[in-house]
Image 1 (cartoon, one colour):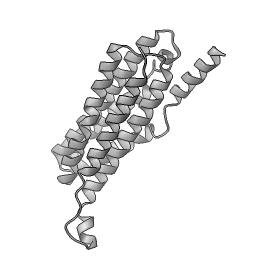
Image 2 (image 1 turned 45 degrees about the vertical axis):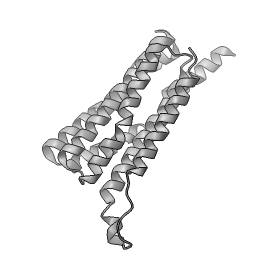
Image 3 (image 1 turned 135 degrees about the vertical axis):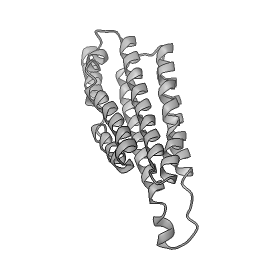
Image 4 (image 1 turned 45 degrees about the horizontal axis):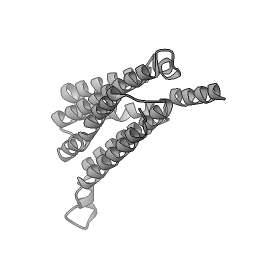
Length: 198
């Protein structure tokens, strides 16, 4: 099955998610600096979520570049990821509007955890379709960054709920550092595949 429609659909959904998030930021009622500074929690939560969605888009692109084809189960795994990403505007807005209160911040972490879990599921399904001896399956066999991310989300949720929401937020801010550089494993898969075809 051709993967082009999957990529195009995913790109469109992710673009809509980012658009919804920015539209949730309301213009302040006032022309002075204090009216703007009152919105810092909303803006910070937007920046954090924009960063996360951008990282997912970037790594999703590289993951699909490393795959040759997809099947129906990959389509469902991709929809599973897009579902949790589409919840980001809601959890982002709730967390920002309530100035990082414990429950909204914990729920935001749960949303991140669900996105990470769904992304790992998509990776696994894509690796299965390519075959157990494929370059992609070999590259994804360890999943250290993925597991570390899930642990970070879980830790952030625990800190936000039992210690202080800002402790959880700091943890959520640290996890993207693992993913800012696109996954080098995928670049290696594309390069190895290209060398094998020449």
